[in-house]
Image (cartoon, rainbow, N blue to C red; front, side):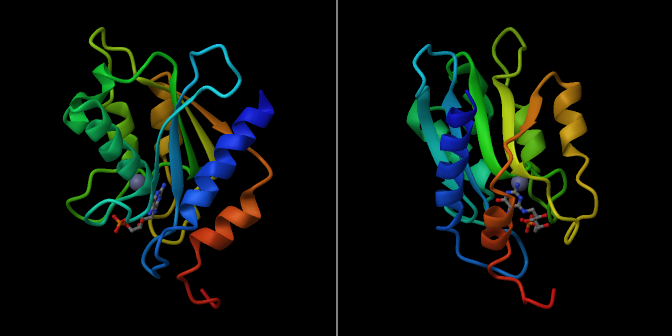
Length: 173
Ligand SMILES: Nc1nc(=O)c(N)c(NC[C@H](O)[C@H](O)[C@H](O)COP(=O)(O)O)[nH]1
Ligand SMILES: [Zn+2]
């Protein structure tokens, strides 16, 4: 079980490395996986990294944009198309506050619901909490858990994740 989470967190980290470093955000990687299947690999559905898709996109957001393309639906209807047991791995916990005009990823995740109202993303696996550099304390975890979405920390990658995430920041920051 743990080695599967490590496998996907490592994949998310490899995606984060592709993100162009910037001083105004973090380089993050994410991947969505269908975990309802019995085999150990599960099914990789999509990956994403910060700024991968057009605009000021977050890793999780890029993942959802690519999933919507995969299923030929609008991002807001994605919840009806994701397979049972869909989960999200992200190197940094989903944001709960963004610069003006951008929907936080916690709201994007909460918006993914099945026809019967259940959350389509059942669990979010995170490598690190969000450092308080840009938006102070990230209250997103609580909102996800209140909606019944488990937020699970995958330990062991913190240092690598943070060094990739802050590649665009001045060392003195
Ligand atoms: N989970 C997560 N995935 C990302 O892809 C990403 N870039 C962040 N970063 C969080 C950070 O707080 C915001 O990136 C800055 O606050 C700038 O906010 P904008 O992105 O410009 O809205 N967090
Ligand atoms: Zn975000």
